[in-house]
Image (cartoon, rainbow, N blue to C red; front, side):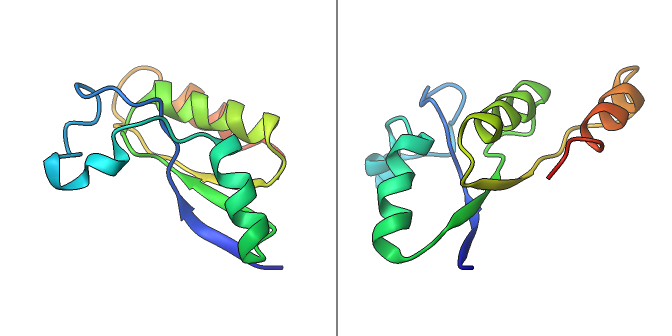
Length: 99
């Protein structure tokens, strides 16, 4: 099995993705699983690992939802700032998601 080990998805918003500067203008659009699937198939890949583009709990939730909807998303790499009151509960919930 061939897997793209580092794939970002996003609904583009210039305020949220300020790191996308003028030299990366081609990235200033939405990138969703439907955009990637034909590229994976054309290139002989069977799946991918989605990696956060922003370190937020909202993005973690969203990527996990995408993985539930798109079976070719085989894993999610996510992180957030611990030390808040919700760190333990989020970790407990997300570490048990079946692969």
